[in-house]
Length: 58
Image (cartoon, rainbow, N blue to C red):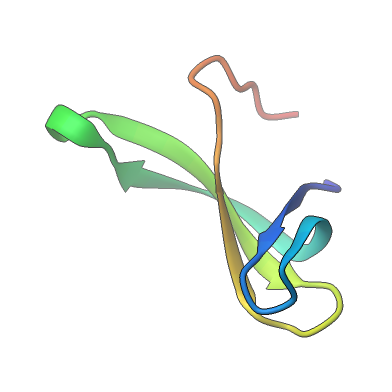
């Protein structure tokens, strides 16, 4: 699964993530939101991307 996100260390907006996993995180008001976590393809820093509510896993 190819997913892009923002890398804080590189300051690049559309940086590709390696080793992507879909996880559940706590949201506001106790709701559960899905997020993608992975490593930056260039520097290896851990990245997160909060996914929309209507996200469907492939």
